Image 1 (tube, rainbow, N blue to C red):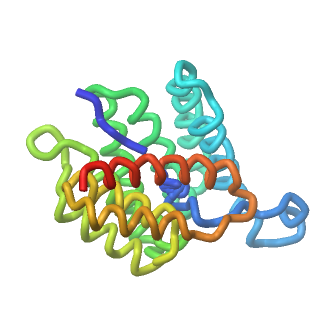
Image 2: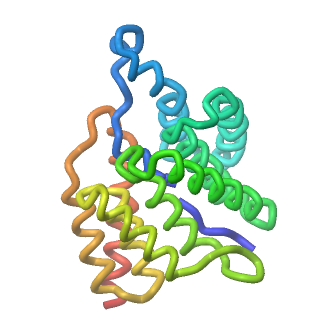
Length: 228
């Protein structure tokens, strides 16, 4: 059994999209002077390394890179257990690792990612532009349903609706909603969301993530148009 996952997060993520994907990392010269930047450092490090593993690492090496990053995420989370952005990015890393790993071992990873995202929503549902809803929605439509997993298309739609309500112009929220609608064979709806995703403004400091996500959006758009 292979679990189809893209998380971002994405790009959470998701951003990733993440997901946390919609928030640019703090400039290096702000880290020492800004109290906010100090809080952001843990998740920004995970975000940057996830982008490299996801979009700039050969397929043959990606699983190992994400496994190492998942171990790093555990250590970061142990130091910041109640920080919503860190919870979100830890979940994105786990989900992405699960997507590369596949099989029953991946299912335990996505269940843990789900738990972290639910915890992030409890801490701050608006963190990183509601990215936890995007990531959680993507899990609900990509993970198998009962009795194997927790997948549920109705819950996926609910989560993705909340993500778009929080960040209607997000490239990640629109991409994942489009991908969900594509899986539901709502091709016209998918095209609408994919086209909206392509209209998203560039994210400063997220050039690699934007480039990779746009390629995914364009691939989904081409598939939806072919099926319509």
